[in-house]
Length: 174
Picture 1 (cartoon, one colour):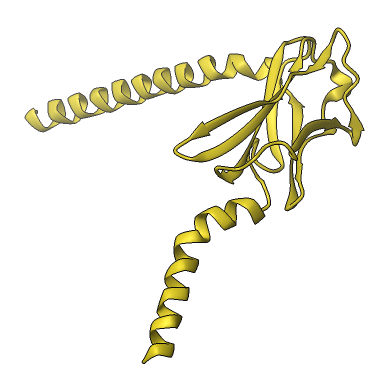
Picture 2 (cartoon, helix red, strand yellow):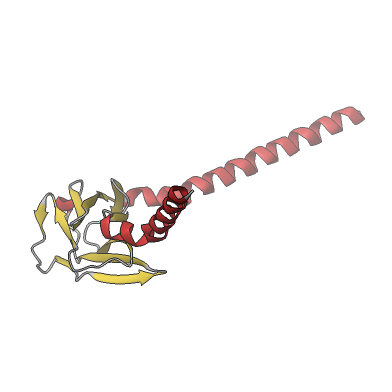
């Protein structure tokens, strides 16, 4: 009986401490961007790529490192690309860290190469890669033209059907 109670106390203590212990020993998890995401942009545009990582409950950030790589290479801040400072936020006892990659002029050479966010801690590492894809600006006219053509076609079919019904109704009267 005493052994049973001691075991219950031990299990209860472990379950109450699980949340705190887990946050100190869990690997970070990137929640944004999604892994292998394709982002369609126009050449010459300005974009901000955000990387956000969940660190756990009440996590300490002193040993966390978060950064971006372009094609496996560290960012060299220049007039076209700059890596922002990382920011920490706490929501409902959960700690998040994020960092933004600012691209002030998307050049065609950056299309289709891996852009990777990495978060590293003593408990593990996570990464997420995204790809910038060229936005085909020529296809945007079809977004307007195709539905318009379908509406016109629908009106023509409806008119022909009405004409056919009227003609049949007229021939039944004869």
